[in-house]
Amino acid sequence: MKQLIVMGHGGYAQGIKANLGMLIGEPENMHFLDLGIGDDFSTFQNRFDELVLRFEEEEFFFACDLPGASPFRVAAMHCAMHPTRCVVVAGLNAMAFIELGMNSEGPLYDLARKAVDTTKDSVVLLDVAALTSESDRTST
Image (cartoon, rainbow, N blue to C red; front, side):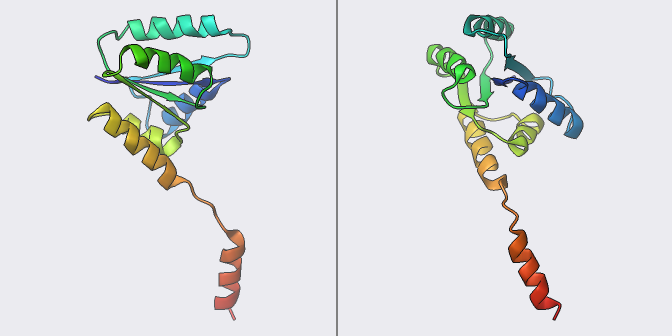
């Protein structure tokens, strides 16, 4: 089974956990690891190491809040040592996490590509001015 590890700053991972808990329930293969305000890099690294050791021979999908930041770097270092068993992405949104929580089957890279595509496709800008203008034209 693939292990999905959500990592980020402050309460990012716990926020994703709460969001998923409300919408689809917490997937059993999804884990949440935050770098807290008082944490240093080595403390976070140790918590990360403890988590991945529990699933030593499994595949890992690391979803981080920001590219290049500490959680991302920790995941990237792990993936450099295990390139065939893990993938790292950053910046996913709730729609991507919902999809991952409901279905994490298939090759890791395909899951990562789909999660990135879902994030891109689900971002919406509501143009209220255009909607208002359209309704003004149709109501006259």
